[in-house]
Every structure is written in structure tokens, then in C-alpha cells.
Amino acid sequence: MTRIIEVLEYSPKYLEATQRLLHQLTSRPMQLTEEGFKQALIAPNSHLFFLMEGEEIAGMLTVGIYYSPTGGKAWIEDVVVDEAFRGQGLSKLLVNHAIGFVKSQGIPSLMLTSNPKRVAANKLYQALGFEQKETNVYKMIL
Image (cartoon, rainbow, N blue to C red; front, top):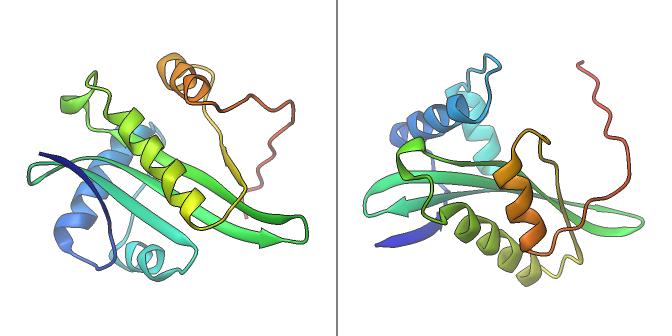
């Protein structure tokens, strides 16, 4: 049975699954610590969702919400489906869940970024109604 859960409590199993999925998401060396994971879980504006296939964690997605003078905004981050479960439309389930969650929070704007090399992901986002925004994204490592 496929279901999506919001992760609200720390579990070593959840940390291991998140680390495993992050390694599939990016080739950058990344080590999520227990403390870092716990901080993400208790942050009131960070919402981690797992896609469950039976008792297996098959994917994840994070929704971040913030408010500025121009209104509430939400971002989708860290979308990844485990390699063993790809090609079954599970990313679509995750993203649709995030859209519904953000709507339920009364947030009018939902954004995400996606590497142009991720052709299937970009096609999915466009098919779900996301529009490519003409802007530059900048990053500073502090």
C-alpha cells in the first residue's frame, strides 16, 4: 500500500533512509548528522514527507514555508524516489501531496528548482502546472 507520511519524530530508521535517499539525489558529498536531522524535524516551517511502499521508505520530499512582506511562500526541496521504485509515478504522488499540503496551509505561492539535466523531473513539474520562472538563482556558501 502506498501512502505519504509527515515525519514528526526522530528515528534512526528515518535518519538512515534520509541519508540513503540524499546519496541518490546528489553526487556532492553530504553527511546528514543526527543533530542536523533532528533540527530539521523540529523546525516549525520545515515539513519532511516520506513516501511509503508498505513498510519501506521509497521516497521523500521537503516543504519549506516562510513569510515575507510580499506574502507566504513555500518551496519544495529534496525530491527523490529510491532507485528501486522509480518509473512508477511516485514522484508525481509526492509532488501532488506537497501541492495539497501547501494549499491547506493557505500559502498562495509554491516554488522549486530543478537541474536542467533532470529531464524527467522538469517534464513532471511542468505537467503538474509549474511554470519556469525567468530569474537567476544565486547561492553563497557561508
